[in-house]
Figure 1 (cartoon, rainbow, N blue to C red):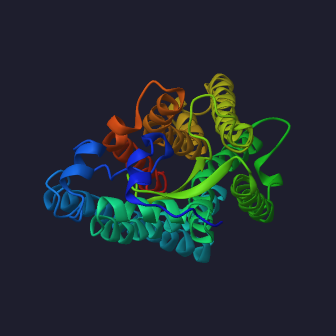
Figure 2 (cartoon, helix red, strand yellow; figure 1 turned 180 degrees about the vertical axis):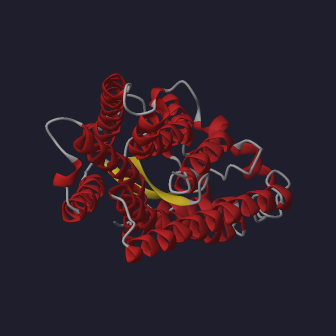
Length: 347
C-alpha cells in the first residue's frame, strides 16, 4: 500500500480518530505534546518522560519473560509426561496452547523494540512512521500473528471442553476416544485460527497498522468515524471468537451437571458396600480436568473483559481516543497476561 506524503500541517490537522496518536505513557494531551515537544524525542519530553517509560518497559519485559518461562515449563513437563506415558488428553491440548502462547512472549519482546524506537522519535516522526506502516506487509504479518494467538485460546479451551463432554456424556465412553483423535482436533484448531486471522487480513474494511499506545501492529477499521461499516470484522468476531467462547461455557456447564448426577447415582448405589468418601474421591479425580478447564475459562474472561469493554466504548463513541490511551494500554497488556495464567493453572 502506498502511503500519502505527510507534512507538519497535515499531521496537526488530523483527528485522533485515526489512531495515530501518542503512547499511553504520555500524560499530556496531543496538542500539548506537539506544541512543547515538537523538536524533542518522547524520552526527552516532560509530558512522557524517562521514568514512566522505564516503568512500562520493566512491566512488559517481566510479563514477556514470565510468559516465555511459564509456557516453556508447561511444554517441558507435558513432553516429559508423554514420554512416561502418563499424559492425559487435556495435557496434549495444553501443550499445543503453550506453543501458541510462546509466540505472545515473542510479540512482547517485539513490543519492547517498538517502544524503544517510538520513544526515540519526535511526535511528528512517530506520526509519520505510523501512517507509512498502515497496510504494509510488515503490519499485516504482525497483526495476523496477534490474531492467530488470540483466537487460538478460545479454540483450545473449546476443544478441551468438548473432550471432557465427549468423555463423560452418554452414550460416549472415555475409552472410545484415542490420542489420535485429540491430535486431529488440535490440527483443526490451528486450521480454524489460521482461517480466522486470514479473513480479517483480506477484508477491504480492515487495515493493519502500528499503534503507539500498545506498541504493536493491530487491525483497525479503515474508517474510524462513528457509524462506519465493519461487517467483515463483526462477522469474523462472532463466528471465530464469540461462538467458541460461548460453546466452551455451555460444554463446561453441561459436563458439570452430568458429573454431579453421576456422583449422586454412584453414592446411592454403593452406599451399602463402599464408603461414600471413596466414591467422592473417584469422581473428584474424573472431575479435576474439568475443574481446571473451568478455572482457565474464568481467568481468560477476567483478563479479556476490560479490554473488550474499553474497545466497545471507544467504537461506540462513549469515550475519546485522546483521553483513554493509558487505560487502553493497561487493559491490552492485562489481556495478554492470560497467556501466563492459562497454562500455569494447576490440575
